[in-house]
Each structure stands twice: as C-alpha cells, then as structure tokens.
Image 1 (tube, helix red, strand yellow):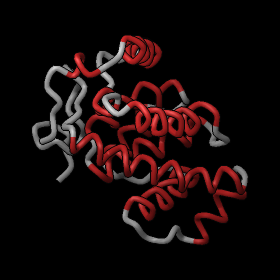
Image 2 (spheres, rainbow, N blue to C red; image 1 turned 180 degrees about the vertical axis):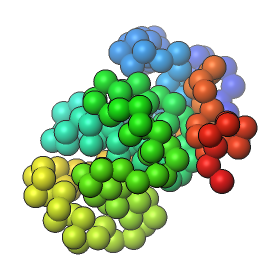
Image 3 (cartoon, helix red, strand yellow; image 1 turned 60 degrees about the vertical axis):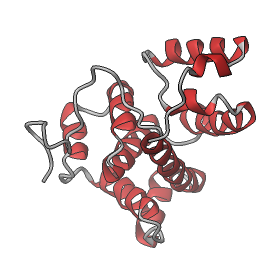
Image 4 (cartoon, helix red, strand yellow; image 1 turned 45 degrees about the horizontal axis):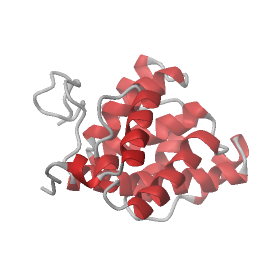
Length: 186
C-alpha cells in the first residue's frame, strides 16, 4: 500500500485550504486519494479539473451519471467511490432499490441497464456495444454518450488511485460486495 506519512507537511497553505473547501462541498471527512495527489499540485489540478467537469459541468443527466459512478465502483470493488457517491446518487434521483440493485448487480430498468452495458465494457477495457451506445445517444445526446464512456474511463482511473492509496471513508458502511456485509455479493 502506498501511504504518504505526514501529508500535511507537503501541502502549501493554499492546498490545505483547497482540501478543506472540497471536503465541505462534498460533505466528506476525507478526500481519500485526492489528498495524496495534492503532493503533486500540477497533477492534482489536472485530475481535479477533469473530475469537476465530468461531475458538475457535463451533459450527462445527474441520475445517469451517479448510477454510472456507482456501477464503476461495484465492478472494480472501489469502496471509496461507492461510499462517497451513494448520497449524491440519492440526491440525483436514484431510489434505494436502484442503489441496492446496482450494489448487488441485479437487473435495473432499461435506461440504467443501457448505462451499465457501456460502463462495464469501458471498465473491462472492451468496446462499448454499438446498440447500447446508439440507444444511450438516442435517449440523451451524442455528446452525453461520449461523456459516459469518458466518465467510465475516468472512474476506472479513480478506482485504481483509491486502491493504490487504500482510500476508504471512515465509519462508512461496508460496500455490498464486502463479505462481512449481510447482503454481500458472492
């Protein structure tokens, strides 16, 4: 595991304030691997800018975007992304049953299954199915379909960072695939 001891001593006052602002805006006690990235300010800024664009300024409908992030988290067993995006997913209009179905890889409505098809292909480094891509573009837009693939690839990287830096959300419920969780996936 890669851990940066005494990370605070590597951060400028401006980056410390940025970290606090991000935590407040997200309602989180930690930024996980984002704080580790801050020791390389130029790299942090690039990653943070793309993430901010995809999450807050893109063309994907919020509900579908948050579903895609949760699907990417489940596929990669990324506890940090699962834990930090559940509340956002609820606010974006995903029901508890949608979130539970995503977490346990159970069937979803047609629109969310289309999203899942594209997300899983991207995460697995496979071509997105043309029929799913066309269907998603028809229900949203061509730019949103391209953005969904980009978001999925971005969260593939985010899950890798979360794993490398062992990012978890303190005191969060375990993700559904954690065998200690009563509804854990096989």
